Structures are given as C-alpha cells and as structure tokens.
Amino acid sequence: MMPALMHTEPVAKFQLKRSGVERALAGRPWFYRGNIDTKPIQGQSPQDGDLIELTGTRGRPLGLAFYHSQSKIAARWIARSNEKIDNGFFFRRIKKAQSLRQRWMPEATSYRVVNSEGDGLSGLTIDRYESTLVVQITSTGMERRKEWVVSALKEIFQPETILEKSDTASRQMEKLPKVSGVLFGNEVEALRFRLAGLEMELDLMKGHKTGAYLDQQQNYQKVAQMAKGRRVLDCFTFLGGFALKCAEAGASSVTAVDQSDISIAAAKRNAELNRLSDHVTWEKANVFDWLRNQTKTLNDTEAPSQQYDLIILDPPSFTRSRSAIPDAVRGYKEIHLRALKLLAPEGILATFCCSHHIDDAIFLNCIEAASNDTHRSLRLVDTYSQSLDHPAVLQAPESRYLKGFALEAID
Image (cartoon, rainbow, N blue to C red; front, side):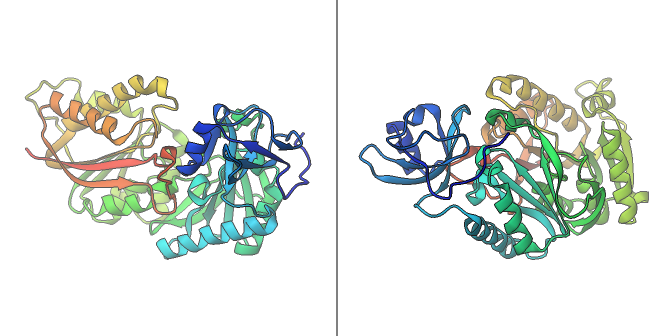
C-alpha cells in the first residue's frame, strides 16, 4: 500500500556528487543512483516518493525532488527553488501548462495538457479529449500526490470525467502496480472528440497509452497538404488520422493498412463520422508482410503494378532499449526499402520514428541505406516533430522522441 501523504516540505537533504551537480547545473530533470549520496546529510531517511532537498558539494541549494530508493532514477526534479509542494503548487503548474496550449494551439479541443518533464512535472502525463481528461502517472512521487492533481484538474477544467490509464510498463521501475479506472465522473467508452479538424471516436480504456496519438495532430495537417490529387498509402494507420486527413484534402485515392482488427474497425467508424468512407480502402494486414507481398516479385528495373504518389510510414516504436537498436535499424531499413519500391517517380515519402533511442542521424542513415539499395535519389522537403502540446526539454533528450521527414523522389 502507498504510504500516506503527509509532507509538503522536504523531509531530508541530500548532497549531489560532482556528476549530479553537473546534471543539476545543466538542467537535467533526473538524477541517477550514482549522482547522489546514499544517505541524507540532514533530516530523516525518506520513504519512496518523499520530497527531498538537493544541494551541491558546498551546500549550495539546487532545488527539490521526489526520491526513490530502488528506481534507477533516484530523484526527479520538481522545483528549482524551495517552495511548498501542495495543492496550490499543482494548480499553478497545470494552469501554466494549459495556458501554453491555449497560446500554441488555440483551435485544438483535444491535446496533451501536461507532458511530464516538458512541463516540469516528471512522472505525470495528462491528455484532454473535449470534456474528458486522461491521467497517466509513472512515478511514486506523483502517485502519492494524485489527489492534488485531480483537485487541480477539477478546478481548472471543470471536466465531466477524469480517467486514469496508469498501465504502462515504466511503472515497474518504481515498483508501482498497473492501474486504470475512473478518478472523477462516470466511465466513458465510445468517446467523440475532434482532432486536427476530424471527428473521431475512441474507446479510451482500450486505446493505446492515454488513448489516441495526439503527438501527430499537427503532422496530420502538414502531410495532408501534399495529398491533393495523389494516390496515398498510409501504413500503420491506427485510427486513420493521416488517411482521413489526406482523403479530406482531395487525394485521388487512399489505401490504409494496419494489422489490428480494433484499429481498422475504429478507423472505418471515423471515416463514417467524417463522410469519407467512399474515399479510403482499408487493408487489415501486417504492414511488413503487405509491403513485401506488393514488391517480392520485382527486380531492380521493374515497377510494381500499383504505385503511390505519397506514402506515409508511421510505425510504433521498434525499440525500447539501446540494446535493441541494431534490430530496429534493420526493421526501419526494410520498411523503407519496400516503400521506396512502391513510390512513384517524383512521389513523396513521409516517414516517422517515435523512439528516442533512434536519433535523427540513425534514422536518416536507415532511409539513405534503403534509397541506395533501391537506386532512388531523394531530396528532403520537410521535417517533422511532435506537436506543440508535447513540448520537449533540450536538457532531456528522451523528451525529443518523435522525428519525421518528407522526402521526394528525384527520379
């Protein structure tokens, strides 16, 4: 059982080692076990999730953090100066995050409200779908302050429902069980919401992560600007965001592929909601197998019977650890090689990677290797990142996870 929440002030003071001081001065949001002394220099031994004060080697105050004795991350920065971490603190932080979204994306009614480190609230993610909020917590410090988070959300948004989807594997790092359920209001199943100008429907409790992939919201619109009059292939379509936005923009045809029965059914329903059912062909198949079947009989000089003028590759993450990078690289090269064989002359490939372990250079190298093997020359015409409601922290490379490129075939 989670220890009772009692402290709004730090229970102990810990001294950072030189490596920890360097991280603090560089603005890093996390401190690992090797960055911090094992015992406090002042106060009682903290429990997991307690608030602690961090100091430098000469006693210089370096802010407040949530402590954990067993996680690889020993301390998560929560404030750079000493202040009371209470209900009012969470209200101010979440209110500030909401104000940023209103400034950056004033037309959006579904978006990420809090993006963990990107909003100075490590271990907390909050998504908004119209009048429904979805909370995901991945740290013990936030878990113990869930009541304050919910209180702030009710005051700021007056939502009809607040759901929790804290069922991610990362909770295991801090020995937290997976939990899902209703925190406030009534249970929601088929929820209607608007995303990038589209009417969408989603079963939040069965959806991925906190529901939909809100981080592609602005990219749906950017990629669709290139779709008019083109034959479009959308791979890993999920809820159909790219496919539907391209159909809405006037694509001459749209084919969308995904291996999930649930995703294809949801995407078809979204097509109905937007009166686009007659404009998209849905294919339920493993994308790797589907691409391979379209191209397996071709030699280097043959063109496939069906080509596409705009191909979108938006796969799930191929790696969740550095050790898996080589396998991920092979996977990315394979789908790009097959896609380039289906790309028409002067066609455009819009391709994305959502793993922070694969940086821009590695991802571009995969694409270049595939283009060399298929003898296709490509020019870079656009770059993409996560939508503005998913702010990244320069000092936290992990927060800059989504990258994408639009590449035009020169031939």
